[in-house]
Length: 76
Image (cartoon, rainbow, N blue to C red; front, side):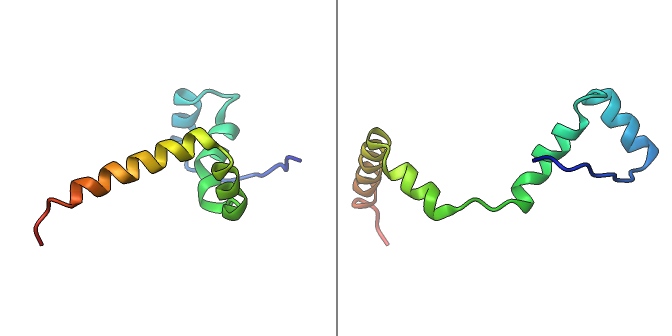
């Protein structure tokens, strides 16, 4: 469900948004910009979903193992 929000910005900011983003795209732009700062994902669910992706898991393990081999030759 969407909610309407009224915000106040400086005239130059508004003109820049209108010119750069477009008059009918400002809401979407602001939402995409703000979302990562205010909506926290359910990490447990996200990690479980990623773990079900077998190809991704195989690639991650392969990458991790190859990275580990690189560190075997490093000196402290």
